[in-house]
Length: 168
Image (tube, rainbow, N blue to C red; front, side, top):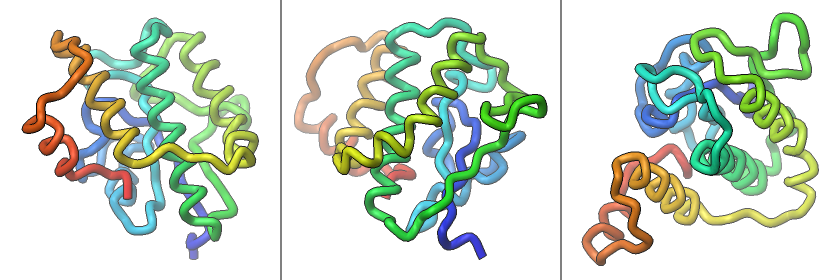
């Protein structure tokens, strides 16, 4: 029934690779692991504990950028996907709705701009690799954990490459 659809949902960065259903629109998170992918989370906060992003700094932009690169890669690899759905704001169907997490207005506007740029980005016909997205997410995680170093040793790289992630 939804073979030509991709569903976007609000997610938190820490749970992006967990297979369990989340709250709110993240109830569809398990479908992010289907092949082909049928759902992709957009990071709207770091964790359940911290809630929605309250500033739009470079780390937040990078976390959100990774989500939209995943969307772009999924759409490029699955040309049969013709429709992208998201949970919209009850007052404006052109904007993402927020319920459990309430990011600040500048973050919400940034995410909404990225949603509306999906077709334009797809027309460029260029996608970064799954591995590049995973490495970027790992760099963001390292910064958040205070391990802000620019490189990985061979063992760390192998661990990142073997990670079970939602990106097919």
